[in-house]
Amino acid sequence: MAARRATKIVATLGPVSSEPAVLEEMIRAGVNVVRLNFSHGTAQDHIDRARLVR
Image (cartoon, rainbow, N blue to C red; front, side):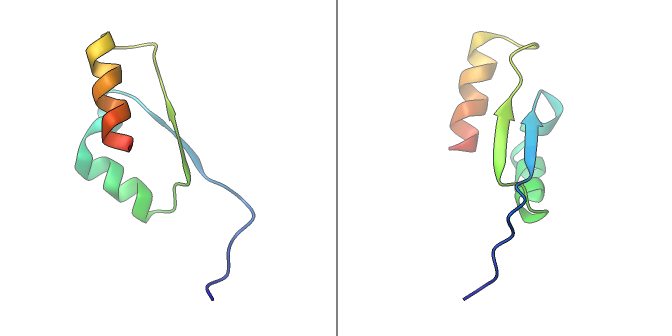
C-alpha cells in the first residue's frame, strides 16, 4: 500500500488554471482539493469550471 501524506494541497482555480492541460498538471503535481474562485468570470464560466473538476 502506498504511503499517504497527511498534508493536503489546495489549489484555487481561476481563468488561467481552468484549461484541462493545466488542471491535469496540477493534479500530477499533487493537488488534492480544488477551490473555485468566483471573483472573475461569468456564471457560465463557473459552471464550466465545476464540470471540468468533476
